[in-house]
Length: 148
Image 1 (cartoon, one colour):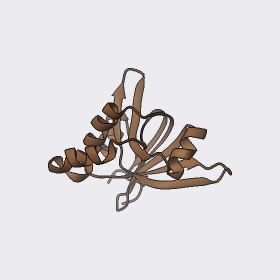
Image 2 (cartoon, one colour):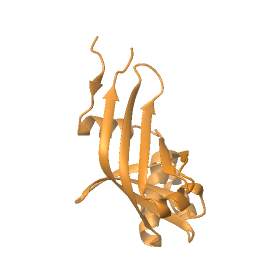
Image 3 (cartoon, helix red, strand yellow):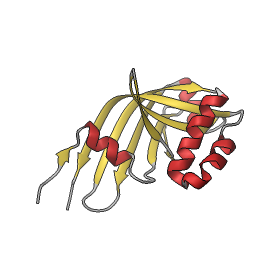
């Protein structure tokens, strides 16, 4: 049986986009402490690199933190044997464009709630006060089959 190995881009992309795996997002609070929250996310391959994409209530702790400091960490893991994880570091940009927000909120709804509820979730989350976050991935650590 093979041991732990580092995933290549195509492997970690398939891993993080499998099913409804959530990400654990870490941001830095005003006092310097860490804040971690589970999020729904997608990965978007853009001309300027791969991006994590998610939405956030503009009044949330994570949104306030991102407005002050755009650096994030996100972990996606398999919580059962053989245990695997992908850790991202990224720099976030925030948009309040409602058309763009609707597109991505609908895609997020499709991933996490199914195609039949995608439009419902898109409309629910593409409202004033909600933010679209695109975070350009700057570093990836991806390990598979840690223990089996």
